[in-house]
Length: 347
Image 1 (spheres, rainbow, N blue to C red):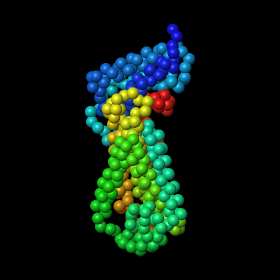
Image 2 (tube, rainbow, N blue to C red):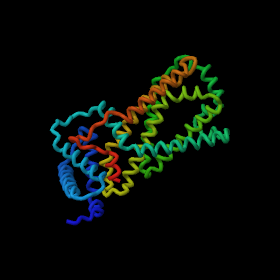
Image 3 (cartoon, rainbow, N blue to C red):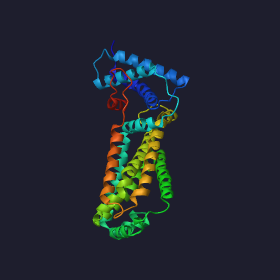
Image 4 (cartoon, rainbow, N blue to C red):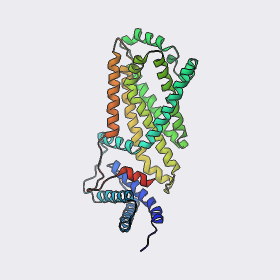
């Protein structure tokens, strides 16, 4: 039998992507289930993938495609024949420590774009501020940043921050709700095909870059790090993840190369979006507590070195958590997951 391999792959890949989407949803959410119609569709996709693998096994073709299809069929087999009892309750710790970092890693390209937009904004903000200090009030929307950095540092180190302030809990609550609202807004702007999310990321990058350049140029680097690192080590990555979620939403809406209807794409990606923004909310809640109860205290109350160490320690833990959180294997017997290959083939 002569097989037109290029035509065959072109026609088969949409079905493989559909099957991969369902698999991801079931693997990421222990309590997810399929309706009768969707279960029958998944079974048909599984049988077709098996058949495709059998047909391709007699031909010499791209080994990455073979590994991808073998892994896909293996994962589906393991899922269909998994005899373990499905949990009936939401497990928040498992969701946060396993599902959240796994979804983050799978969507790392969107995070890289979000990081790039914020970094570009930071470079722009720093460049404008260093070129013209009179633009300080334009670049920084917060009035307490409009004074010269040395003046603010002197006031903070000699002011009421030496004594415990009242209303820390209220301030922390305000920060939680405000930051969560901005993060959700950043994700929701993904409906503008990602343009709005990128603008928010760029704008916040401008502010951060301008503030950093202002304080470093004034010789107040220690104060800057001691002030921003304790909460910023968590808060800034959380905003980037919110932007990541917005870009995932944008990619879903655009649907380039994806033949699924828009409604189906949105349903398939809903779990990932909810996981990302849910993780962001938890990170921002912690950052707000740190900002209210630690970041606002300066020397001589709390040494800057201690605050900087705490911030770097948090950042290291967060990086390890997101990059190397507990990973689940491919739910198969000896079949490699080969996620990078799967993503490349699916594109």
